[in-house]
Length: 253
Image (tube, rainbow, N blue to C red):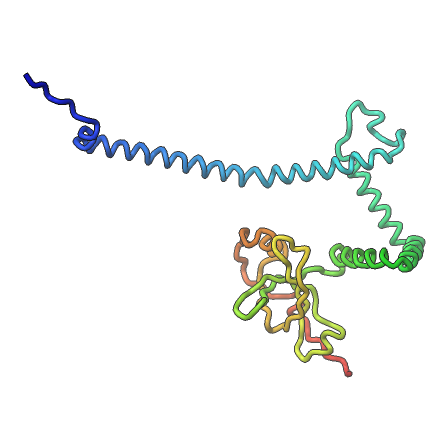
């Protein structure tokens, strides 16, 4: 007497195509769920990371000034002496007030005299005078309200024709550099990526520049992010920066 053989799993699977399709759909749903969870994770990182890093840096700066400035405050003038809790940001606020006072003193007649005497003393020191002069010029250029700093974002063909680089117009070229050339030149700072504090100073003919409508802040963001952050297109505006300045006539040589 013969008994019928049991069907193998392979035969069962091949004989039941509906079961096969059901397994594929289940695997596809699992993969889709994992993809959505991964996208949600990345979205959460994008939302929370800038906020968390900003808060962390602010706290670190405030704590840095608090731990170093509080020790110079006299005990009787320190509010924390009379309070049962500490005041976060007290050192930072003290530093800001001290800088305001120094600026007010330096703007006066006595302050200017003291500054001139100190600078004459530093000019006699071979190494220190170079470092001080460079740092002073940099801070005056960046922080002075009358300097204008970066005025406009432009495109420059660099390092060869057909390749464009993002640059910032600082001012019109004057002095000997302009006098020795026949074309009207513009000072363009070409920053490096992702550190825009270093770069190249280019003297570019005004007509060779392509002026952009993006703000200087958007241009800096684009440089720091290596092009990942692209500012939205702004409506065209009439340029009022250095590109519209009249050409400087060469002086007689």
